Image 1 (cartoon, rainbow over the protein chains, first blue to last red):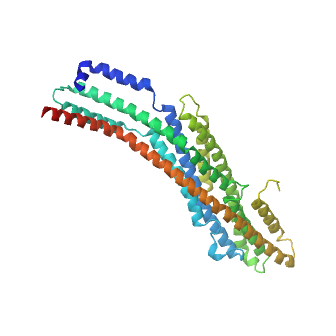
Image 2: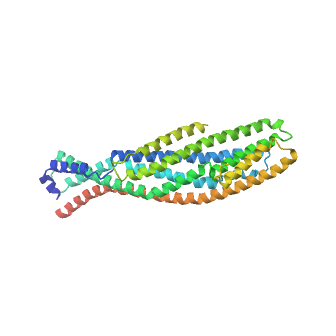
Image 3: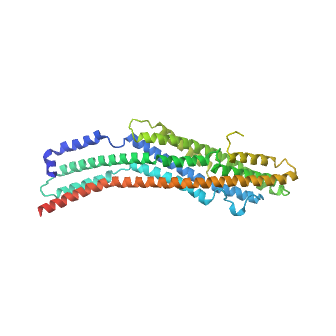
Length: 295
Length: 103
């Protein structure tokens, strides 16, 4: 069979192989890959910022409860200054967004990684082996051509397998991604009774503690502490409101982008507007977040 | 207060109203207010803790599902890498077959 390669003419074989690569079109298009890369990268950024904020809000909460204790707020238990945002509760959330980040990064690698070097090495190795077969006399030029053909056909197989895998993964993982996104949205929802309420009630606890301390007999001597408590409460509230709004907007964009992504991996003709909007939204969020949480 | 406010948000609003009264009430009323404030903080805290713990279970389930998805991606990436391995193995097989045929 291999000997017939020589008989048929390498030029024709090379042309046929390249034609197969071009015509089959079974891999992901450049646009599809770019859309997946954009989605995956933005999801990774979103997960990083969300995770950082979850940890930061726990630190805020401990600081605020410590201030409340210093102000004499009896509602704070000194042994539970991290009440509400315990390590276990933070960890459950951080683990989930870390899993979302890992998913995004792996999806990116799956969609865009190059097998060029591996395929070239394999194709060159194939030709070296072929030259050792008795009766197969190959010039350097012909050996190079065969290597190119093998590499091209291998590339076609790789792209086919890659496209198939990306489609399978994106379609099968839709529900899980949406589940994490919905949980994050609910935690940061300023109208829900979850993470944001825990933060809000701690801020209000600090405000109340400052107000009570201001009526105490030693209020004048504690004016600086009372002032710091009030400023901390205001700053934390303003920052959390902004970040919550950014999370909500990013979650909304992520949902639409996820729907878009499902279509993108199934059709070459689809637009990627939602993914572009999502990426832009997350970029804004990251910038704003860096400003708000700058040390 | 909007009618659609949740229990927790309604309780928080009441707490905010109580705190706003702190500078205005008499010392006698202040003692009563302190008690109500502590009870409200406790109620809201209990509610939040219950909700967060329930959600933590949901987060853990979602984490496990996403980890499975990531493992599927790793397997898919490994399968793609096998194409190059298969080409190399094919060459070796041809070489070996030729040696056997010549022997």
